[in-house]
Length: 254
Image 1 (cartoon, rainbow, N blue to C red):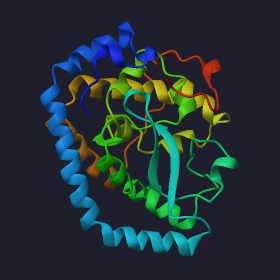
Image 2 (tube, rainbow, N blue to C red):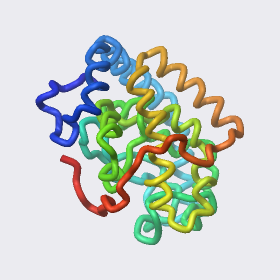
Image 3 (cartoon, one colour):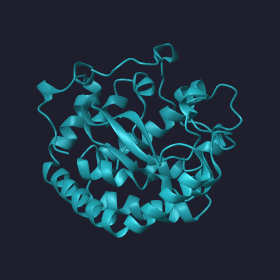
């Protein structure tokens, strides 16, 4: 999780908007190291303890629908690096070819078992593998697909100074995002122009306040958020402008 030298960052991250966040993180080297140690130790312990649950869910998925146990997709993490995210498969095998990359509440692609494990967030458990490997961390900006990262403003790219996370304050506030998006006529456009900017304001707060204590507090809040019903924000406060024309299906990050 340690920072690179400023001069070695991707060109599209070496901007004034990113620099102010970089300078804050540069003073938190020890905290970043402690967080990485925490990630390695806790993810390894959980992978061992939850192995029976891994097996049970895997069997349920295989018996419920055709396709593999895991859903793997290219996402973007620290410094714009692309990686394959691990999730339990909750949709039909060819879901990416028959719909948007944003999932809605009544999405017909979701399987019967998928509805159960999505509701309880159990589909996220395999990301412990990503955390152990260093591609992700427990608390941080949720990893986006490439086409949404291409829509980031300069300041949004400051979130790429840190590894992508399993949960965050934005994840808690938008834990029922599927329901919010279910009535949209253009899911991708609504996500990019309304939801993403609002979530990014929370994510930029995470960059500023990051510490091991802060991360643990977010993990505790996430646990209780999964157990309770919370109201989803209906609009983005002071939404950050996003150029919708920048959406490209396969453009790679530098």
